Length: 298
Length: 275
Image (tube, rainbow over all chains, first blue to last red; front, side):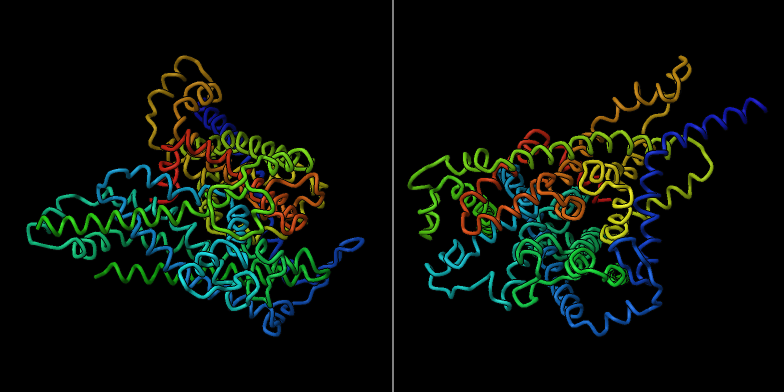
């Protein structure tokens, strides 16, 4: 009995030893900061000289309501999420289904499609800025086939769309891979039975493939939501950190960055903003989850 | 019936090829721009083969722009050390959660699951203040230490070890090997596929990360490649030939890794995603 408890004690010690690096980082850089950011959101933070924290209760949160730039950022982010998530999900599904159709050269296509997922957002944004250029490749091509050209980088009505196109293009292949894995799990017998009943390819896709992939679609949509709400790198590089032209590429995270690290005395406000974003993401995820659960009842 | 099948086939190939072109064009355009002269660049033509092939752009970024090699070193250093630590610490934590009994294990596991759902931006402001307090801003450890574990991969390793046959470990223990010995001599070598997938993703995550170095690194010598590239853009406003050359150099290592470890990529994504 005594030796057993000693053994248990030793195993506990080993357990903590094995966990210690993870626990250290978890406490110091993740859990601690979560409480810290809540604390900050209720304070006015001054970092000049010795840091000072003045309790301001809900002032930082109230300020969001009066801040036009915050509303623009929120609206831009919302527009971005609502357009990009469905587009990239559908594109990923179509790509996966076509890649899975048993064609020759599948692996080559798969390697090509995967390129944007491997490439850093900084490089992708720069390549696209180079192509979006006033007399860059895209405008030249549009011009060559008689379509109107755009000032993608400088026109406030176009800039965010330019980022959307780029990101749908670069993210869809990642989700495509998740769909590809899921497609392997659909039993062939279902398709064979449908073929005997004379179902067309489109019918098979809509009646068998899409319903079977519903749980995966829900997962892809949630991952997409979380990712798109956090848009930062592309906006930052695209606009040189400003969110321009005319605030058109300003996202919530870019605004948080500006208030936290570029403006003085607004760190507490930035903390309130980022907490609000986290809550929005959480709520959106829960709604999506509930939505897809109800769907699967049918 | 046969005719219809042919039509579908053509449609499917059409989609596949069209999308392949859409994917390749930006990269080929960037690659070709990196071998063009500035005159050709500003000319605004749409030829993919440079009229006058030149390596000057690459020479320029490596020789004239002496910071570029430094940024590259910073990126490699941070990514390599960070990946090594992640492999070690995530496996240790995953193993403990899968195999060892200790008080509070359940709480730790639930915390790790909860952490998976928290967007990184939430911790970015406090982490800045903590690093500042530690004097770690603008340092390698400021980049490496907060990222030396990853909740996703701790979770992944736990799943891996739970499905791992216990008998081998028990046999090793019978032979008098300590837990630590069993872990390093038996468990880790057998976990190689999971570790490979993890290594690729952690390395790429670090290599491509833009936001964390933007906040942590303030001196231009301490920049990583993504940040360096961005300042490059500011400095050489219309020298897109240099910017594209630098972008290609930046992308090459990841492409090489991908070429070598292609199969682990797909596995890794279905590990982290799929289920």
